[in-house]
Image 1 (spheres, rainbow, N blue to C red):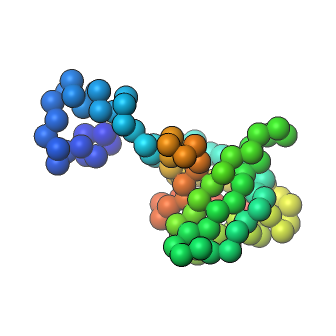
Image 2 (image 1 turned 90 degrees about the vertical axis):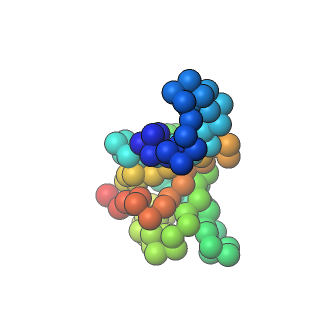
Length: 109
């Protein structure tokens, strides 16, 4: 995956390792499943919506969704107060949030 990301830059293996450790802003989480409760869904703003995910009794994480059609299952989960399973999401280290993109799957339990 990282080779594909940096293919166009023609970086050597050493500079590629340095670039990855210093400048990775977003990581795709394809194998993990996140089970959480949804809070504070905002209306669509320009091209995205935001909300909070409660991943434990004491931990909340911000989330941004760039595909409004994927927001419906999240809103349903919030209204029903049921957990949602999120798979194939991205994590943005710079903003410390989860990113819902085209490949993300979000389903209520």
